[in-house]
Length: 499
Image 1: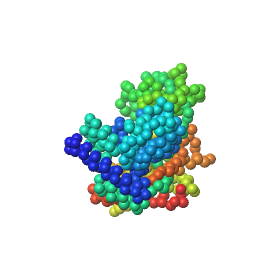
Image 2: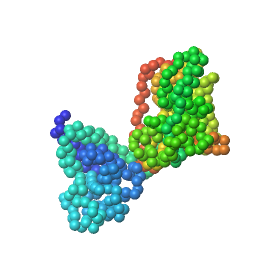
Image 3: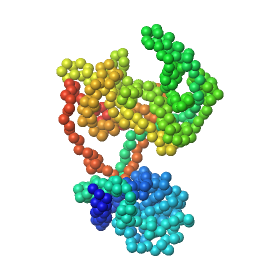
Image 4: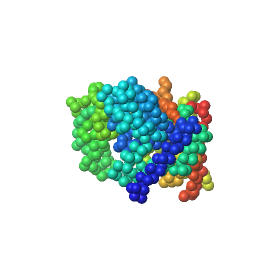
């Protein structure tokens, strides 16, 4: 499809957009305006070259005069279906009163219906901040202004991308579905409480950096002595990470609470403490105490190093909680007993004391013997908003062979089977279990000073989204592999009195 056809399609759908807004507003249904804010973000990003965020969705209440913003580019948008002079005046008045010109250099007022032919700029001057440029001719825009900007874009692929956005939102079928949803009340202005899969974390204020001071020849000689004793081939070199591990073990330290980057080791352990065993493998004269925040904000590279350190620290915390890191799948999972693998239950506390099966036996339906174990697990990453850090926790399962450690060769089939049974509610309950399991502390819970995981925080969003309005239909697929076990849904967390 050529450039002209793409633009023609955009014009057609943009016109439908305006008519839809006018129709809903005439019926007193203003929720379509909220929907419009979300739709406009990708379009405006493409046209203006921005990275806008919806301030209403992110709950940044300090910006009452605007709806969308790109803080890095210092550009803000007010999105409204009201096109009269008073709306322009009120927006500028709030913008000035809240000193938003300190955060933004440009303000656009986007009218999602049709703007007036002209506005009296002279009457607006008193509401515009000093030294801030705003004219209704340039900064009050509607679909016609947007279409002119789209037509002037030199990139045909970009125009095609915009056309696809319009087509997705304003095809006849989408409009009919949205109309039905609004009329039936699936979308409304009520707030809804949600629980993102984020667990707040805290860690020490300071970290430590030092150069290594390891006699590599001595460490390799010790390793080779051991290898010779078990008739194994000797080595000539150790990778840096393995060298540090062997050096720590040589001083009776078995710890992964560190990370290497270039010629430095980084750790939360206090290297200035003369009793700290880590001092035995570093150059004492190079020890430097760093503010964590100052370090991870230096660059994307230092941020990655810091997240790597957090992951290693998480591994150590999980060991206390009887959870192991399985590198082959990059998951944390409840650890089985290697000498005698079996089903496992752990004590935990939500509202009350409870016990949860975290490793299930899975038996052959015909012969009755154990064919594998199913361990509750999670994938993780770390995410920060300035100084606030979160563990992103995604519950899953890990299927092991009867030995209780190595991955079952039928895991993909077993995983497909359990996913067919589980609902969003099931996964949410696993997340809540992990939230309580990690955050609960009492006199009998061993403390870990390098990382604390706190209970999940709930957020309120508006408009409320009824699950039935967006939840996809579950498609039952034909099993590609016939398996000889019965996969059962874990119902232990369905009792709401637990949480």
